Image 1 (cartoon, rainbow, N blue to C red):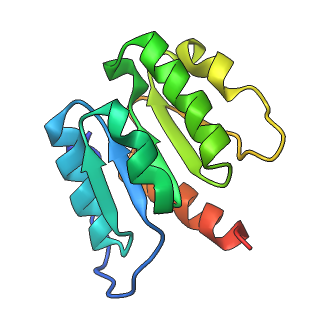
Image 2 (tube, rainbow, N blue to C red; image 1 turned 90 degrees about the horizontal axis):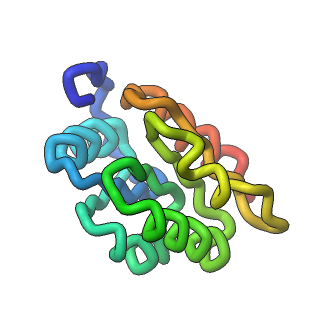
Length: 136
């Protein structure tokens, strides 16, 4: 994934907080560097169980659900949508059918955006910025 990241000009302004959760440290490190360099403050974790606490003040979550057990992913996605209805969830997966049940429409909750793996950093950045522009 990190090999496909395009350079972006450094920005000094603070943008929306993004959480990146992936079991692969190369993925978390690469996205952290890319998004932070583009002006999107980013925090990372390799533990899915950290998602609720990390997302308390976040605007977006980039999650790689294929790297975690299906039941844990489903339970966490549903809980996050309930607890943080305005959180943009970007789910990068090679198996979208795995996350489909947790992505069903829910009143008052932003629908997760499922992206095919591999997803490029610029695509994630565009989605985060578009979501921030739509926010009240």
